Length: 228
Image (cartoon, rainbow, N blue to C red; front, side, top):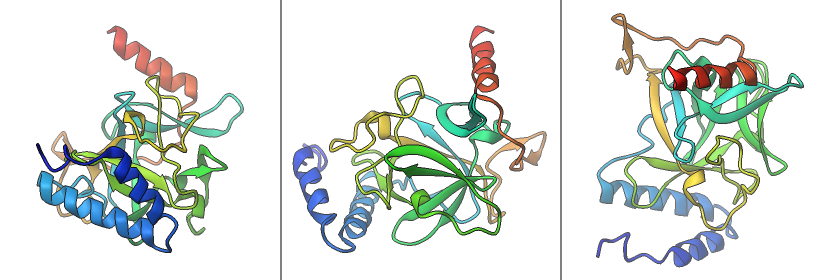
C-alpha cells in the first residue's frame, strides 16, 4: 500500500482542524503537507505560482476555468465555465505571493475572494492594497501531482469550489474537501520573462485587461463552441 493509501482521511482532517486552533498551525501544516506531497509525487503543483505570472485556474469538477463575468445587475461575478488559453482574458489571473504558501489572484485588479462565506470578486484600483478576503492558502491535494485547494486565510475552512455546472458551491465551508474544490494551474504567461509558455504566431500571448464579458455572452460563446 502506498504512503497516501495508508493515510486515514479522517485523521488528516482532524490534525488539520487541531492545527487551525494554534497560531500559525495551519500554515505550518500546509507547508509540511505540500513538501511531503512534492517529495512523494516528484512534482510541485505550485511551481507556476510566481510573482507576476499569469495563470488560469482549471476546475476539476466543471472541466473548465474560473472566469469573471458581468451579472444581469452589472456586478462582477465568477463561475467555472471559462475557456482555456490567453484568448479568454477574463479567465486569466495574475499571481501575487505573500508568505507561507499564501497568494492573491487578480484579473485587472479584480480580486478572487471569499467574503461572508461566498465566492466573490472584489474590484480595486491599481494603487489599493489587496483585500484580506482575497488572500488564499494554497494546499496540495494529497496524492496528486497537479491538483491544489485554495483556502481562505480570512475564513479558515472555506475553499474555492464549483459544482459540475460551473456555478459556485453553496457549501464552501466543508470538512471533507471533495473534487469540486480541486483546481489545477495552467500557465499562460511567465512574469519573469524566462520562458515562453504559450506561443501563437511565434509570439508570446500577453495578458489582455479588457472588460469581462457579460454572463450571457460568455455562456453563449461556450454553447456555440460545443455545437460546432
